[in-house]
Length: 339
Image (cartoon, rainbow, N blue to C red; front, side):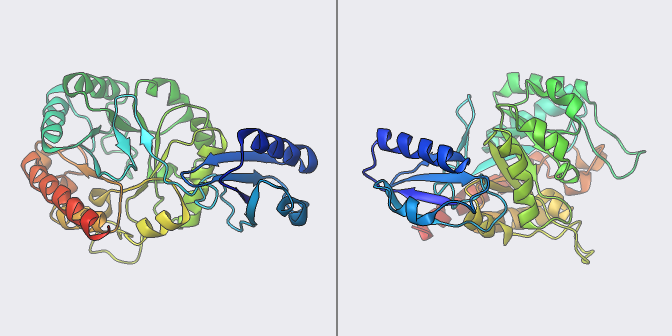
């Protein structure tokens, strides 16, 4: 249940009303203070809440019943867009276009430092790179693991770019203390024990959509993290599995405006994993911007032909330079059109 309060409600009135709700109906109350109004979200068994009593309270503007199973991720509970801000100043969801770029796998110090410097120069605001790599084949390169994390941190020192990298196990959480944004990959989107533990830490979580999951299932996974107390969730559309074989996955760009309507969380798009083909990345990156995405995640490798993983979908630094120029120009035009 959502209760919208009157704009002129005082802090004292709101506090007394919230305490009355908790005592009377044994529900938890979340508060969101928006630009124009304050919204209370009731979580728990709200079937016993007397709507007539609520409407009779002086501070109440109106009430709404919520049917969706996700509450904290629901825009009805949180009308304003969530903006994720890092201590280093970068923001996601504030209306600007953020780009996370870097190699699929961290391979060595020279590689990651070079790519980090190139993507920063082109306008990327985050360095992405895999230290732990979940692969379909047990014989494929699995990542440098802890050494890869150290190399990412070294590249951060060189460039100042916050790092984004994937976690695979609950037991690894302590190892990720120095990571700026922890990524939950598509295969772990419904690893609920991992999501619960990530809900206990104060760090942004980038949650990729599962290979064959619905938008509601995706938002419910975000709910797991937020229910634990961590509201810093970024959603990432990376394509879903369909019967189509021309591309690695089918990029569901309609998910972006749908998420924007249903949720207040920022959403970015990964055209690299979605298509699996580097020549498709520029077009799909621009299409993602036109769909209203808050950012992009793009794979960039200094030598894609010899990459240890996903070379076919990786751009060279020169190609990334060109794509970055186009998407930033398109974003500027998009904002003008949408005014």
